[in-house]
Amino acid sequence: MRVHLINPSEVSFGTAVITPRWLYVLAAATPESFGTPVLVDETLAAVDADSIHPGDIVGISIHTANALRGYEIGKLARDRGAFVVFGGIHATLYPNEAQELGGAHAVVKGDGDTVWAKVLSDCSRQTPQPVYEGGRIEASEFLRARWDLVPRKSYMWASVQTVRGCPKHCSFCSVWRTDGQRPRQRTSDVVIEEIVQLRRLGFRFIALADDNFYPVTLTDLRLAEQQHNAQRLNELKAIRAERFELMARLAQLPPDMIFFTQITMEAAEDTDFLDAMKAANIKGALVGVESVTPEGLKDVYKAFNAAGDALVERLKTFRRHGVYVLGSFIFGLPSDRPETFDTTASVAAQAELAFAQFVMLTPYPGTVDFMRWEKTMEASPIKVAGIPITRRWLIPRALRPKLYWPHPTMSAEEIRGRTQSVWDTFYGLRSIWMRSGFIKSLRARLAFVLISKIYRQMYADTGIATDSARVSRSARWARWLARPCQRLFAARPMPDLKVPVAKHINRYSVELLQAGK
Ligand code: SF4
Image 1 (cartoon, rainbow, N blue to C red):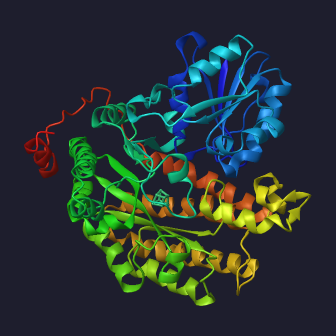
Image 2 (image 1 turned 120 degrees about the vertical axis):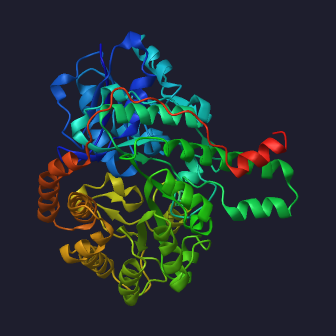
Image 3 (image 1 turned 135 degrees about the vertical axis):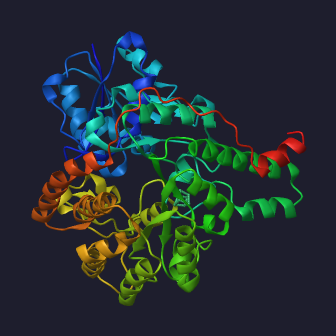
């Protein structure tokens, strides 16, 4: 009996950008008595059905985008006599679907880190429960990933999580509703130890795969102070101090290490934080810009973002402090008009973004937007291939609509075409080369061009193109580009690298110490 952990994907690239962290965390959660799990990441290569045998246990984690492929694998594994267990955000939201369509014997809802051992033990005794409540575990219970199992040459970046949860409440995002609004932050010791292990193996690019790396803003601190809420203020300061401590320790790692994370735009007001990021070599951050207009920001409950000139200035602040931005924009908001596309392309250029992504508004399960949209569909549900579009992930990919909200002034095809054209403009070879001007070495500049192209091929065409020929052409291109790209990102292993000690105490830690906390 073997344990298999499978990350489903309809497209395989041979080489992938970022390690799917959950595979290595659940491998760590698998007790030794079950042997070393077989890890399959289908973004590299499709699962080999013959490797699954009767009595094996197959764990599949799904999000909405890969749910359909996950169900195919689940049915296949069940037909071959295996126990099938689903987890991940989509299975948490729709456990019945995984049972009805994916052949699941069991579904894990919430965090899998601590409950996985029980699931395995029940399956081995042939008594799996239909649902396991993994809940939201504390940060001290998060497991370190089993990086000893990673095929190093298959990935460009490794991924380490430092915090789960986000205090914001954006209408299009499910993070705050599933992972919670209270940041669950790991201590710097465990994070650094994992990162050092990865550098020892030869990974020098690490994604800090957090929901929001900046969980406490200056505004949060100011509000707690104004409300004379001493307890809240101390909690916030402690979280902030831990962030600074982590960054101080990252700064002691070998200088060739580079980190990337996700952060809210408010960090631009906090130049101490940006400077600490720079010192820590956190060179890049995905910033959810979403919309360049105040109306658009209201549409997504993100009025804390800036718009217009103030937006350009805020984004440039990141750059001035050495943090390069991957700006994320949403098209198809009710207030968008044809000119919004050009304005967005121009803001992306003026703000000196290093990378950008342009996604079409899609209501995701677990979000406020989705609940609102589902309600509007109750009276007269629209179906495609007999499947309600509120369950769009079950519609065969080729038939799936690209836009789900009816827009007041533009057709879905107009929004799709204009979105595609913004991608084309931003990722034209000339534009990329101009953008890469800030990089000094030719090798690094070449890496920038390659990663820009691969990013565009993997995420733009495979995501929003309508014809399958374009999707498979993009996948071929991405496959072709990915291998040299991986080599550019790899570094010589440093098996003797030591874990740096925590020696930096910043002024927030000092305040806490003085307050006797
Ligand atoms: S979009 Fe970002 S800031 Fe908004 S709730 Fe999600 S993780 Fe938080």
